[in-house]
Image (cartoon, rainbow, N blue to C red; front, side):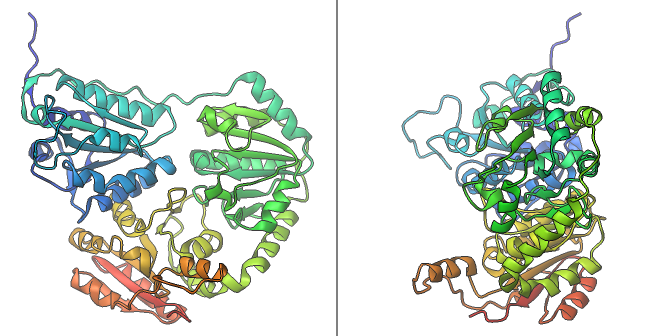
Length: 534
């Protein structure tokens, strides 16, 4: 006897498909057009966190994804709500973060010409296609489950990047016979071709001055990267997204140093460079050129990266862990004895080059490191205290994470991303590290953090506005204009949102405030005024 599938609305079909793929948490804001989703979340065991702005929902889902390694899910309603999240989608695309954004859309038979329907938008899929890897509009309820499975297939089998799924309004509410949702196949890590592996191994074995450059695509291969570095005796440099893959207190680790001209010069002089899971792009190097004189070997899941930016002499396409496990047994020869000395020289030259600029943050960063647990998650913003301070000078190991918005370089990332990271693992220490300018892009998410009630320190270095742009104007010989912000009582603002707020004028005061903030419920904004700020 044939079983007729039960009728389900597009909203229920979506929620069933998410639950079938293990989703248990979504970030979003309910609206007139997405209420059918909210009707079904509780019955399928899916929790919901409501940030105060859709951009915050996107950054929170991003922080959740980077912390767990699982896709982050964000839900919006139509029109302005979906457009509000596009900055977060662009950031997730830039940093290869698996993010699924679900929204309603105009009805299937909606006229091309405007009719004045609530939240009417000319083309949501056209808008999201410009920033996401895929923007897919379904045409039936039965297609909803398949579209979700396709998104998870992309996350598991290709370079993970954001996907937008649109369900037309009439399908969202209309029941149609729908069977069980299909499931994305389990991840199957790709292996590089045997011939390519042998050629790369021969080049590495013959290298006299090898070096490693690790990006975010190497994160799942932390143990293999360390073994490789020690086997070669090679200095290890990382991008922002690769920070801490190799412990930064290891004698072969030069940390996040590619922004230093002297370090780049030394890297370009090496006879062999192995780059793993990195684009070697301007946002990694802080320059458009890296004139390598030696042999470049690249390991990347994305085949295009083996010839993009800087073409590889030996391209290895595949999952970093899988490729390295096959590559390591093929290497022979003793490790270079000069690696630790090379790293000391690199760091000494880097630190001398940036001492005048970076020294102001070092005592505060040492205080943070002395208090935070080894597995703490630190979310950062596009702020000087983060890219000049924490990235090169706050050491991490593989257990910890620093989540930084590279590439797209959005402002306002740190606070909502910290909310997402804390939702991912409430028992783990999470802190947000911000500047005063970037914080105010998403400061309303203090209310979200207060409602959740998890301890969440938010450390804000206040330089009185947009200091990087102010410095850039001065470097051009211009008079700074429109970059100084009126002072805000940020601790009082945090208290108004239901959290806590204190001022820390010294590293010792920051330490006292941080110890307390890690134990009290809700967010604690720790305001650190920078010397010399307007």
